[in-house]
Image (tube, rainbow, N blue to C red; front, side, top):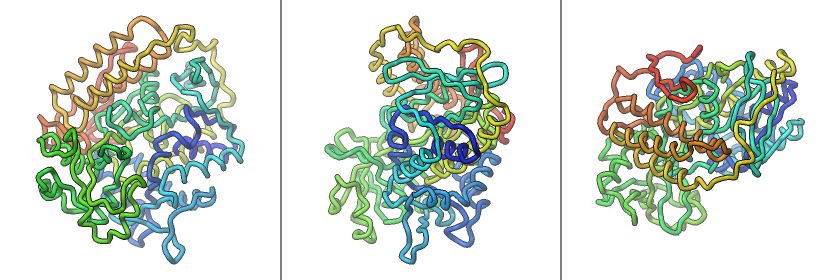
Length: 521
């Protein structure tokens, strides 16, 4: 989503634009599998405005958000609904023909819009069609894995084809919109490509990541034998419709954890509550890894049961749901417009950090993509026009050797994903995080030697997993999506952000910055 929006804006500003995607453009990313919800402040209620949206975002992020980044985001959303409609996107309407705004937990006012299809594809397909019509060049089936830089900044990127052949693309400006790293966890709703390659590219280029300890788990993911693994929107079924979450004893989980107020029923709090019940042995299902969503308490079943996934009978009285790795708040440290510290390089969307702080409020992911895509696309176009054509000073060298046969590293990747969910997942402590780091080190030893494509990519995944674990180990408190069993309370000493960066080309080191804007990092 962020990439397509940026490509459109850059093209509208007169730039020659190449949009590169690992999979089919607009069809195989986290936006495509989303429910298509996004927040637009100031239009759904007369009392709402960008300033209130900013307050809601920072409150939801437990005051760790970069306020300048958030300000850029909320101030550039007002006209995005009109832009989408002009691009052919169809949005849900009220009976009088006006746009229908919904209220989500964490938002003071109704400001959440949705596509008529109820999916992110309803956003992406029209935007991709408009981009193609405007002359945006598109390349599919290429995975970007490395930044090419010279003394003046970025001058291109390296990628590889599906057959493993290296591809170099020269550019005067580069916008990374490679998504998050949820696929580093065994239990996730993220697409296969969401393994943190963009964050790893930044580390390898000497750039800093920020807030990597904050990984959001969506609280209510369907976990029932024979049923699809899909998100059941608690914002709709619990917060709005009145479904009840119960443990195996039939107890109301919201009562146990004092989560009565739907305004503050954010994803981090509900996920911790559900994970705690499961950890205490009060889960349900064959593996005891879920809780009950009791649909019998829904106030208007005729209205809401039709919103259940197609494979679930509308007459179902209960579902089994549990947390799943969903979104990484951390990412590349950027300035307010998405600029990185490398001239000519922008990072937007889930690959970037700073906007969401310790927890993302629902419907703000796609909102961020729209706003920062608009800002970064325009800025990158102007930068490219100003600097002119860039070519590397020397012949670029591929970051891997394509002639080395591809080894089967699936067992190593599976071991990493199991380790991350078990030891650096929802509930953490020093012992589990250190054990996770030890396992990452052991897995890395299996990659020593060959400079193959498989080794390079898995090594990049290990780097990002290590960044998450080291940052989580350093933050000795619980805040937002980061919950430490050994430090269960929030602590003012940690009112700030952890940066993590590579030193000597390999070793990762964290640095704590007391609460402030990350501008200039």
